[in-house]
Length: 93
Image 1 (cartoon, rainbow, N blue to C red):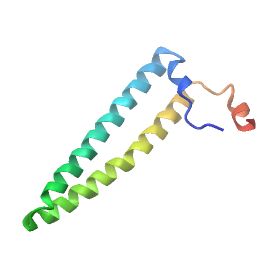
Image 2 (cartoon, one colour):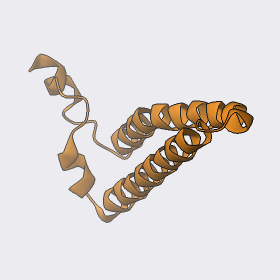
Image 3 (cartoon, rainbow, N blue to C red):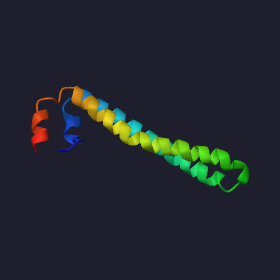
């Protein structure tokens, strides 16, 4: 049973728009997390910036945790847009 099915993204124009929005959000979260880790790493070179650097690492970690959450929300939304015909068959495979 496969949870994330890429063929859903092409079912309609609404599916494509939703998929594109979530891919954009996923990419933005990726860049923000990377930025937090890079700036936090630089801050670790100074004792005066150690606490803000630690907070940036925490924020970056939370952003990385948001990525699978975004994918799950996207798949639920795509499912609710009408992909119910083959639900029973997916669990049989």
